[in-house]
Length: 143
Image (tube, rainbow, N blue to C red; front, side, top):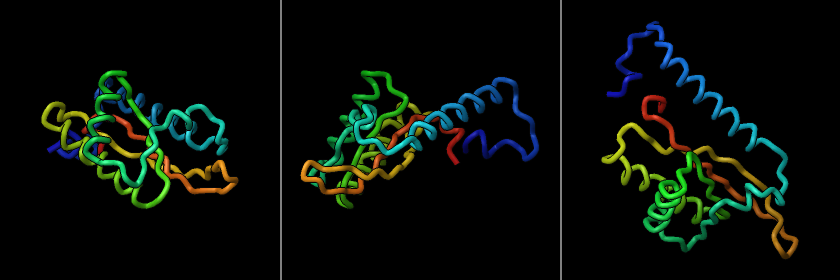
């Protein structure tokens, strides 16, 4: 049972817990503002997203994402998908990431912040892309 569930209703947070909550909310707000910006396809942060195809193997993607997070010490990473098969494989990989990391770091959870972008393709065709921002957050903040 997580700390959040064990705490009685109405109990005040300690100063340290309150600071942690404020930091988490500030990070979430910054992420939201970044994602809500104009849908400019030239934006460099969108170009840094890992592109997932419909033939991507979810297990390999999960291991690759974990390696990226660990080696680069990232708190969040972006995955871009176009099409339902690619989206389902990306989500499956993220679920697999959580199952791989859970025994080693039970206090960390990967959560998804989805966002939709319209991408201009080379042939002047527009496609809808799902951009999934994968964030690491302490388990106690997961609802």
